[in-house]
Length: 331
Image (cartoon, rainbow, N blue to C red; front, side, top):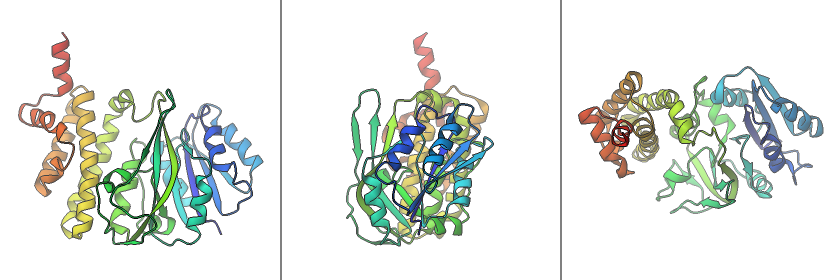
């Protein structure tokens, strides 16, 4: 039985793909309870060739799916369609799994039936070699939580793409389909399954290593500024869904949806107002997001990250972007 399908979206990752695949395979070559699906998103470098070489060496573990470029969401959508594992998770081609962690993860999954499995992850700063572990607070490892009923300061930190493993059937049952042709759809991947999760478990495993330092990463401020329209498009889709579902959700789900939406809105306003120059399209979408969320639940805007509040208020009452003000003072 295939316990876990690991989806690796790949676009022009020839420098990192071998490192990524080795981190998954080494030590697990003889196992037959997981699969790797490399989704080549129309790469223009040697990514496809590298993936094919690994497939030839490990034909029982690796499948390679070559498709036209459609951005991150299209890779996840295709992976979900092709996956045969009981559980489903994503590993970016420029990231890695910690050595030995997958073996522990698979052993745990063999006796699991929860909708969501949450494991720890780490930030790995490639330029310095420094590693920062992201550890949840206020939870118990290996405890079965029902109806998303856990509490604690850590639950809004740990729920990222790097931490979650979903039951494949759950994602298919809710008809999960991420936006295609845009970036930042990992936000949708975290948000949309929330309302369907009835059980989850935290594992005391540091599985995912999120490498930071590559030029062009979505966390790079320059990349964020270039991709602001994608970020706004995804945020608007999530806010629209939040507006429709919020009043009908349970108190627990409301709280966790609000935490997730707050994180996303904070990041959106920070990128749009601080990093990007003002333009009519982004300003229009920001106003729509702001007015919708304010009508639903004003607390969403100020639940956390209060340091962004003065910048949002400045924009709301004057129309000025902090990025524009910085340029004025630099002159």
